[in-house]
Image (cartoon, rainbow, N blue to C red):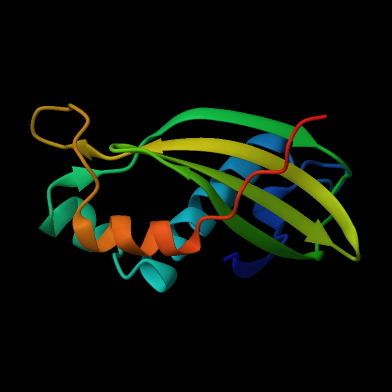
Amino acid sequence: MIFETSTQVRFAHVDPAGIVFYPRYFEMVNGAVEDWFAQSLGASFKTMHIDGGYGTPTVKLEVTFLSPSRLGDELTIRITPRVLGRTSCHINVVFTGEGRDRLNADIVLVCMDLDDHKARPWPDFIREKIAAQLVEAPSQA
């Protein structure tokens, strides 16, 4: 199952040419992941980090920039979970706008204990929801 949200390219996202400055995409990716956890997995980052004592740092991020996004563009962001490990989750994030892919990111998140900074298994209620959303990654031919 694919989680979908959207965002508008704002002035704070762009360089003097009006094109998204690439580090700003990472902020938008992080916001979309936070929305996925809150809206689709039922665990806001407050619930996880403050109340639960565990975090979900990004430990791997591979990004392909496909076409520019400009000030005022409305972007659709799709998150697709691909692989669920005991303590990790591989997701794919795609930004699209006006019928064109703008960015494709493969991300690995890890569940960790905020006290000892070690990986820990996903809580059952999160694991079950991620597992229900898994979509098999397309084969690389």
